[in-house]
Image 1 (tube, rainbow over the protein chains, first blue to last red):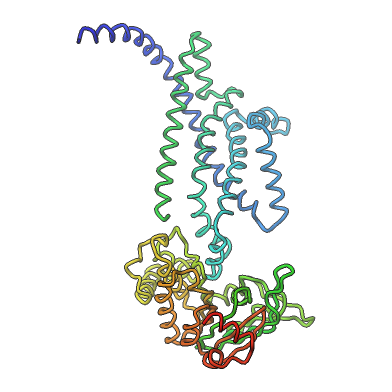
Image 2 (tube, rainbow over the protein chains, first blue to last red):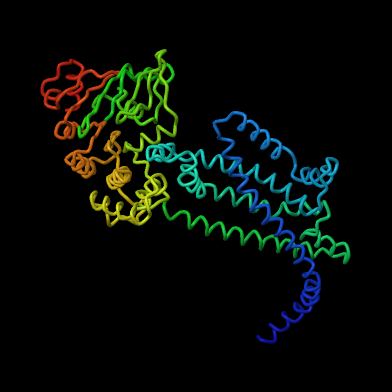
Length: 232
Length: 250
């Protein structure tokens, strides 16, 4: 029995061993690429969510002009490809005297784009709160901002977690777009290895990296949902 | 305490209030009864600026929140002033409107801390005293979703009382409750009335109106049809509309 096992394991090991050796050679540049991917991910998240909240509040403001301006902004940013926006910030803005390195250019395009999507998610979340909550706060003497900040937005968080989780997962994968402006993120590191070594296994490794990142994200959002559901 | 004069209010083409005048004195308990759609809830909501009136004037404790200018057009004082004046009025809703993401205690201390700048410990002490008064001290750390309707409404009353109001408005406080739960809410309201709280109560609880109110107002079709002592309204109504309404509900 043992011999039989060895007979199976040995050739398998022989196949796997060079693969493992190869992977261990490309893993360092791929991890470096992943760092760039994660940096872009975190910067976009940290800035686009607060910006999205502000845009959502502007979208439901009682000032028509503000509503329309933000409406146009959201239409523009959701209505054109993210890659086009990245190109515009990187290649287009120098024509207006603003020249940016590729990483800050990518960050700006991503933050502006994701804020537009978040704005619509948050607007829907805010508008799903029962109007009795506004009335309850109003008769207790809360101002509009106190009502929003202390009563409405905290309840909105719970409701928008699932769609926000969706966006965040999309964001992890969208970071691959900045490959197009020469940023050394995960996909670019992968493609370099593929071209240089004429093998395709780096693609598999990259897929595993993306899957691990989105898995962790999914778990984080599961935890957040659990924590916010205690009052339901 | 509350003086409303000649109030008109329409929603689109539907005229809901047709020249209502009403005065509530300090320590008085006034019950408003009438068929649904008669405008009683709208009247209450107008008094605390949840609805904007088309015509008329509203004066709370001597301070106008809406008044008629020299051309007879109704104007409101600035929002900030209205908030200041309306802080003296507590309101209890049919659907409670508790904050679901906050515990019972947090629901009660939120407004005193945020709006009245009461120190937290003081607010907590006051909230606990109020919870004892409505018999829910053991629920202080529960969330509203864990309470029965009657318990929710008692918390809502405690929350309104935490702002130390001079007047309490009740908008059908027991209408959303199972029949067996109305008693506990009515008892709290009865206790409040005994403490001489000024109360204006829109209700379908005829027993409560008859026993607790100092004065009963019967509304129908956006007008006050009849008002008087409970015993006059219930035993000897002057209007035919009052009589037919009472016949239906009693």
